[in-house]
Length: 49
Image (cartoon, helix red, strand yellow):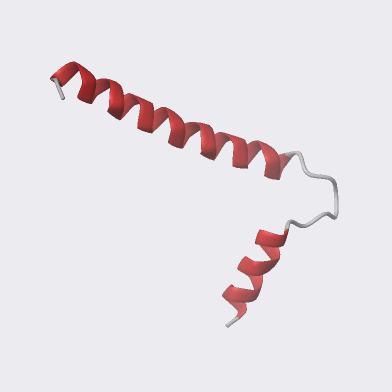
């Protein structure tokens, strides 16, 4: 890969990571009151041990 392709690949990876983090943040902040996702329940159960 050329230097230009490496730079494009790095920016693509960073943008995908940012997209995933921002979507998770948006989903968790806009969820209905009192609702809890399965992943959150699993994380709480694992943290209790």
